[in-house]
Amino acid sequence: MRERCRVGRDIAYEHLAGINQLEFGAKPRGGPYVFFALKGEDDAMAACSKILHEARVGLAPGHLFGGVARRFMRMCVLRDPGQIAAASVRIAEALR
Image 1 (cartoon, rainbow, N blue to C red):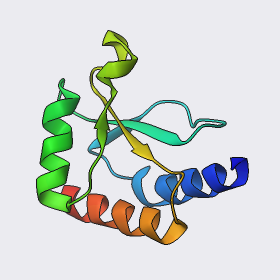
Image 2 (image 1 turned 90 degrees about the horizontal axis):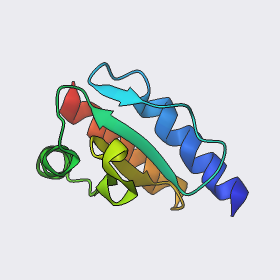
Image 3 (image 1 turned 180 degrees about the vertical axis):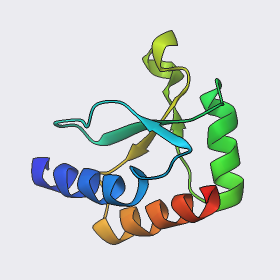
Image 4 (image 1 turned 120 degrees about the vertical axis):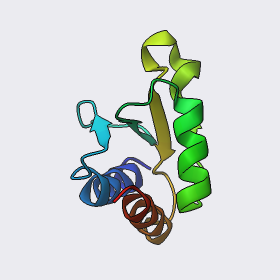
């Protein structure tokens, strides 16, 4: 599972980390999620909705992790690598 999370995380970062509209914290060393925020959007629920409608990718708002994570969305990377790549590409294309 650790290897699958690492592969998924690396795929997501490969496609998304260079997108100017996205803000990332430190690259996670483990875990099944990648966290990022949409710059200029203080409410992750609104950002998740925007990405859902424009990229057809479902993300979860980070507010469940407390107020400090309110701006951040989480993407599960414990999935098939092809699905993660396709979702990441769709997000990148929608934000460009």
